[in-house]
Image (cartoon, rainbow, N blue to C red; front, side, top):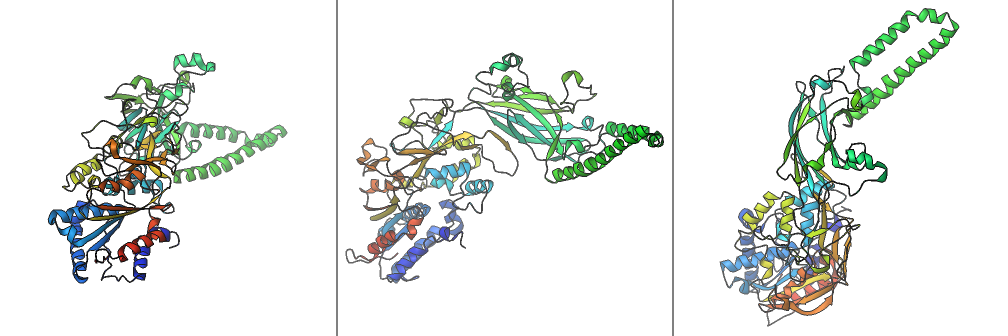
Length: 621
């Protein structure tokens, strides 16, 4: 449709360009689509994709008189194509040289793309903003088995760090408790069917889903996380007007309230609409007293005036209370809006700082929490809820000597690296940021199953799909084409979400982009809304055919950036293969990563290459 046409053409324009110069589908032009959500080993296990693709290439070779093919791949398809060549080489050492004339990677993330890491952590709508909300984008980004394939396994020595995390701690509060709410509802006429639990730390409030009341008991469970400063929730200094109050650490002080946790119990609807036995009895007595003297009041002028006001009061009562309040209560119930039924005393969270093993606390809930301490009534049984409070300190120690970070390095490697002037980013001179490995931040996000997938699927694969881009594929010729000079993401700055509640069967993100982060950057790099980007003014080392990790990589320095998705250091890595095969590179200024497939300059480059005779041998695509 109109909204998706610009997202869905893929190789259509390329096929049309080749047909115009005489290529025919099924003869010397073919396409081999694949399920891009799967890891490569699963593509072969489930679909026999690479085995079938080898057969189709062999059939084209035979149909066209022994002409080898040009294998054109784009984006993640270039990693799939590279895997295919390694797979075929393992079956027959001469297969690639016989059947493949040229491997043509287009917009290839040879070393991965940092944007894939951000998509796993915070979600990526992939241009489908009109169709996906934030939660759906997060769930989609975390569901792809191919995501680790695009996350860089290693970084060149000259690349900036790709993950920065703000140094901050957090309180983790786990709840699995049954509350006897009978004492809270003894005086109630209409009993609620369900209740909601709310936790407030400072100005941050988290809620559970409504839980049903069964036999005057309700059960809550969940995990709540509140972000704090690196040393805990303490305010640096109190305001002058409340210095005495702060010495007492009371809940009414705006400075001290940020250190306290309060637990609330809520019920659907408006509080003023909840009828109590005591209130009903008071109204009944008032009405009966008025009824005894009603006729005497009518015959007395003074009482006639008073009766008028009494009648007016009844009218207001029935219209306002029985009308608007009941209507508002129904609307709030339908919208699951709550009113407070009970609350706890403020819990001083500073007492739990440093308690990394967790501490169990029984918290009392009272329905007279709005009254002063001296006016609180005695309750025969006080409902309690059991919570476990755990302090989570900043996981990574600040180290100015570290040089950068490897994104998603192997679990056994714990040493992050850092690059020069991005070693510390300050926001209002209050926060510090640590370079972090991708493995570490995925571990913090609770990606245990995903990391097991990396170990059990990718790292166990004999063709090493996450790092096979370091070495050249087993072909004679490589013709690389990619766009340049567009602002391209090379890293991101993350912070903990201020407050998070983890629920069953719902994907949540513990970290988000720190859009307020600022700092001194290397020349040409920009930091926008938490995303670190290279620009056309970013100095880049032009790679040469030497060891990847060697400092002697440089041929020369250029000012350049990637194609809007893949950084320049990942696109141009193909140059390091020049000693293993014939490599030629075409860079298209301003060609965007996906739109390059509809770029006339790329079409001309491709057509010129596949229609030019070299060594009296034609090529097919």
